[in-house]
Image (tube, rainbow, N blue to C red; front, side, top):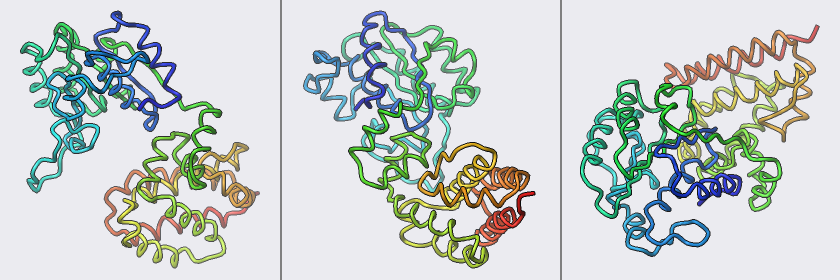
Amino acid sequence: MIQPWLLPAWQRLLDLGERLPHALLFVGPPGLGKRELAEALAARLLCQSPAADGYACGRCPACQWRLAGNHPDLLRIVPAAEETADIGDAEGGAEPSTGKAKSAQILIEQIRALQAALAVTAHHGSGRVVVLDPAEAMNVYTANALLKLLEEPPAGCVFLLVSSAPRRLLPTIRSRCQQWSFSRPSSSALQAWLAARDGQAEALLALAGGLPLAAERMAAQGLGSVLSRFMRDIAQLPAGDPLRLAAQWDAWLKSKEALAAGFGMVTLADWMLRWVTDLAALRLGGRVRFFPACEAVLAALAARVSIASASNCYNEFVHIRRVAQHPLNARLMLEDMLMRYSRALSESTP
């Protein structure tokens, strides 16, 4: 499914027709639907009878193979850790567990396997499509291996690369692709998206930075109710005990609700950083971005904190977010985080 805000780009791709470049690079923030756009284009290119609106018909043999996950001319390259995701699992099943964590990188062995697959004639017709996402998951060796394919592409092969961090790609990779950049949807598009969803969607959309698909994933995880508790707890902290709240949050992170929603220390630290970002922004004359539902609370807090304290608190939480992946002691980390926050609030404005 192509999201409404990407339909103009979809039409431009269709208008290119046979002038479509052999390599496209879709870039923009995560949560916009870039991967879905790439998949729709791949389906269109492989379809034997595209519909009048440009989409794949879904009925021809090529579409049936693709929908079954076994089209031999559709090659997806994703990190091993993501190979079991529905949209990226071309084999239709997870690998047996080996006891080792799967890599979050795209490995050079995957590109070598791709080279071998492209060295033989296409199984059906003359076209093949390679979808590689996220492109920034390649290290320099993997990227150089892919570069050889982009420099001398097999006949009839189209490469569709997707990236949320294009600056992490080799310049030579970027130069071999036609880059299509996407930004956050317009206000009108977001309002239309919100109109079809429940009351929690607006809070999740703001927390996701205006990225609708990221908000949808959060809602699907059950993070809506988790977010409600977070906002309630942190809003009451100035009048409460940070050590007591740390103990409550420590138990919360171990609860069935948090585990089921995938809510852990990293997410909590990220939300705290965003809360402090809004606080510092208000203190510096800016606006609330991530927690508009708590704007009145944040404004009252900003009025009592000094600019220096707000800025220092933000810098401290940037560091906390970086080390939240592997806390040596979760309880101590929570206590330290909330004590730092409380200390910043206690430093009155000059």
